[in-house]
Image (tube, rainbow, N blue to C red; front, side):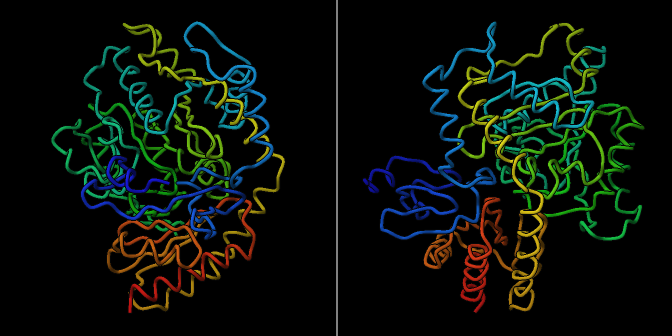
Length: 424
């Protein structure tokens, strides 16, 4: 493998071409393991950025992809349709809250957010209210790397502050201060309500990550906060966009994180785990009211149409993944993962330099007092036989749902050893 070429010519995510972070050549992936070219085997604690729910090289998903590629790998979705897309959209309508009836298939999570923002803007334009063109988002939120998505990420922790004067200025409320299992106090929603009261006349929608704020800080907040957000949006007749790209398909212990609060958004963004990490595919769902009003506007259509929209190969893999999940005891698996993460990562609370430990569903987070340097610590995790990719002060894992107790033990033990090296 030509690593010199990689280093000189290939730009990896969030990396420098002049001071590149270390990369580790992968030869194959199987189950929860990544096999490196040098013979080492790593337990994957990241599920390839939240996506590989069933691990790697799963025979059911492989068979679905092989069968489909022998029939039809892709056709344009403009003016054509096909069975894999129809089946997938039926699944999504059935599994999501009842008001969500319309499905727009896209090719990545960031684009799902872009489409959701377009929907909210066209919704008000069609009603003769173009002044309602801004969004309210939450501090510590993260919604993707494309331009409209960047505009609703936290201007500081959302990783896009260098574009601050180039993206659409949005409104930001303070991040939820109530932990997931903390008793509710109405003061937690005070800033959100005040921002709505001051800006509702120019707001098209509220966008948030339900229950779990991901790349903006790996924070878990109270379902009651989400419930109050829904109530306030209803009070001021604002659309609510739920970005479940990271949380959908069981990661938090519910099929969708919105279920923790028993609420339904007006627009829902899905992605990542939808194809179990095998193909790129995402979706934006909305209510019939939203779609009807958009289609009565000046354009009469939703102004978006990706080239690979509804890709049949991705759709058939998504169908296979969803069916596989539905036919396994995924809720019990997630409860077991959560309990083991709580028991084993809680020991980190006593370690020097650790600020907080928090776990929810298939997510475990250790927050340090100080920022870690990826170039320094990434090799340490690999030396422990685990694939964990921290950012900032956060060491976190979200392993595949098929992980065994022994493999979780390998992850948590390795994390504790690396934290000890970092803080001593």
